[in-house]
Structure formats: structure tokens, C-alpha cells
Image (cartoon, rainbow, N blue to C red; front, side):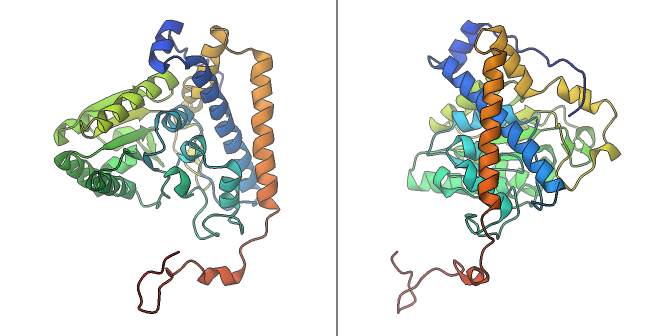
Length: 351
């Protein structure tokens, strides 16, 4: 990532952070920073491996770490995550093992999907993380359907749907928001606006003043947040999740970020982004902004930052080495897990 811009400071007195994050504010902030560094290290490593032909595809979340880590920390085990392309870090923060995700990226024999799903499309049932489909916006309807099921079963949990600015032009955006409001469902809609729908700039995606303002047409609250500010994102997610749990219905959050890499490993952004985009993005780097706040408030120093950097690099390296040394799925596995086991009468068999 190039650019000489200085990251915009996070202007929060320590007392405000204590209020936003609660008694464990220092531990939460340091944990968030470490997770963000892990996400940044993972992106750098996997993009390099894709260029070497060692993995087939990768969609980085560089610039979106504050949103993903805040979501992982703010949600509870009962909640369900329906991702777009860049939310894999949410699954990791919620407890999905890094090595399991590495196996998925290499589509090896220990990949939970046994090589049947596209890289960056993991499924992590143990942390209620549903695989994305790559079809724009469909996860919105899926999240609403799950929220309806939760209510029908009187089960705890909120359904959290992530989608990009481009997905607001998809039919599922209209159908999902409309149904969720009419049925008063526990859904949190998170529009991560990184200002590019692959190559289409946000101003050509919508004439609305903001994506959050679209909420008014459907009858639900809509709020626009700086998605590169960890404290702002975390506090708004906690608020929205609390309201949804209390039966107050769905909320639409627009989280404004700056895409700091290509849309995916299949994209060349130099063909369509303005020449100063990199500098503009660096000025809103969420990792650098949080580190600057930690340094300014005596929570970390250069030695501590360097130590975290080495730790996360070692974790990523170890996971990649283990996954890369694992053989691919055997051919016979193509016919496994295709049909549910049934008894002699054709009914589902007890496991």
C-alpha cells in the first residue's frame, strides 16, 4: 500500500472510551488492535500467495478491519452472521480457528467444505457464520429468513447481514428491508460502503444523500458511521444489537470505509480509480488510526506494536504452512455428504 498521508486521529478522551466500551475498555481495545493486525497480515500473505499461484482467488478486507473486528466483538454466540465478500475476520474473532480458514483457502482435505466452495467463501457453523454465495445481495434475504425463523422458534439471537454499496441496487435489498420491517424482525443490516462496487464509484450507484437515508422509505432507523473508527463502529453495533434483542425491530447501518486494495485478486483498480485514491485511503487506515490512539494514551509503544506484529505474522505463517502441506481431497469425497442418510423407509436417519 502506497501513500504518504497521515491517518486522521481518533479524537476520543479516555473517559469517553471507558463509557463506550465498558469496564474492560483497555483489554477490548488492545484485543481489537491485535485482531486488526492479524487481518492485515492475513490479507498481505494471501494476496502474495495468490500472485504466486498457490491459492486460486482472494478478496482482501484491507481497510475494513474496524468493522469486522467490532462486529466479532459486539455480537454474541447466539447471533448469526451473513457476510458479503470481506467479513471472514468476523468469523475468526467469533472463534473460527485460523488454521481451519487456511485449509479452506487452499481447498485441501481438511477444508470444512472439502474444496467445494470458492476461496474466501468459508462456512463456520460453530460460530453461526453462513457462507456467502457471491451472488450480489442474496445474503440480505437469507438473513431476514433466519431472523424470521429465530422469532418463530422464540430463540435468542440477532441476524446480521453484511453487504456492500453495490448490493443496495439489488432486488434483495428492497425485499429484505421491506419484509424485515413489516414483520418487525431482529435483523441488523450493515452496508459496508467502501465507495466502489468493483469499478463503479458510489456516486454512480445512487443519487441518495447516503445509503443510510434509504432506511426512511422502509420505515426503519438508518445511521451513517465512520467505518474506519473502531470506537464509533463498536458502540453503534452494540446499540443496534441491543435494540434488536429488545424487540425494537431492524436497523440499517451504513459503515463508510475506504477500499485499500483491489476488489479482488481478479481486479486492477489502477484502470478506474483516481490517482490520489491511495493517499485518501491511507488517511483513513483503521489499523493506523487505532494504533495512533493507543500510543497517544499510553496503551502501547513501539516494542509492544512490533511484538504483536511478529506474533500475528507467526500465526499466519504457521496456518499457511500446515494447510499447504495438507493433500487435496480424494476423488471419492465427491460423493460424500451429498445426500442425508435415510432409514429403510426413506426417512432421515438419526445420527
